[in-house]
Image (cartoon, rainbow, N blue to C red; front, side):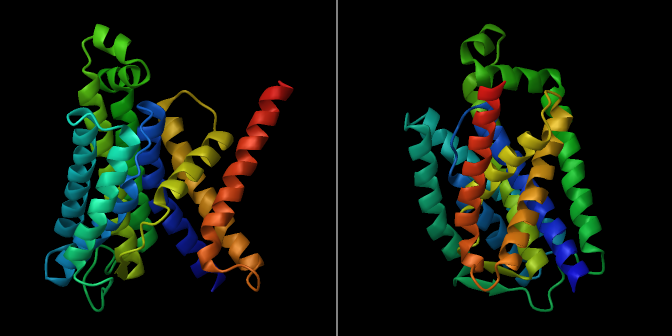
Length: 282
């Protein structure tokens, strides 16, 4: 039973790592507070679950979920850049709109994958999850370390300097939001297939989980190397998920599963205060 809990915590931690990578892209590269991820996570789960139930292969369903995440990110970027709506408000508008779309896709608040072939069928789920997440992490780190990726990072931090080097800031925002929401939708798809169900509220608080994972990872691994930064997001997600599991298990009679967000809030505040005290001390 304990080993099952450890495996599940590690698996979900790896999946949350994809969310952390997406949050890192939006917050650290273009400083864009993107709440779209709350709904694009559910969007990925909803699309893949409905397609699998209707007989589509799990691989096709999973890639379809990623594609829908791309569209969600592009929609947020469009409102911000073309419609000149403030970035946070743009993401809130898309997040709210996607909630209704997700419910329309699902047809009802909950869907169950009973006796359906999923991406984990006849395979070791932790190996499949780890393989997918690690390959994506390495590819993303390699891309961000390339000449194009360096241009994206420079333009995201300093649009004027980016323009001087011929990098269009608008294209950078589109690229980052599309990638971020694609990763988050993939995470939603994988989690729904791992758990065997999809729920309309499963994306609530996803941005907080991703942010906490990024912060924890940065405290554990401090590096400017993109590969190390990318893996710090994964490690942060695993550590975060483990801490949450331990907290809920240790205080089983006091805390409920619904208390996960207040635990996360306390954890983030503690880490931020610790970081500030260390900076003052140095």
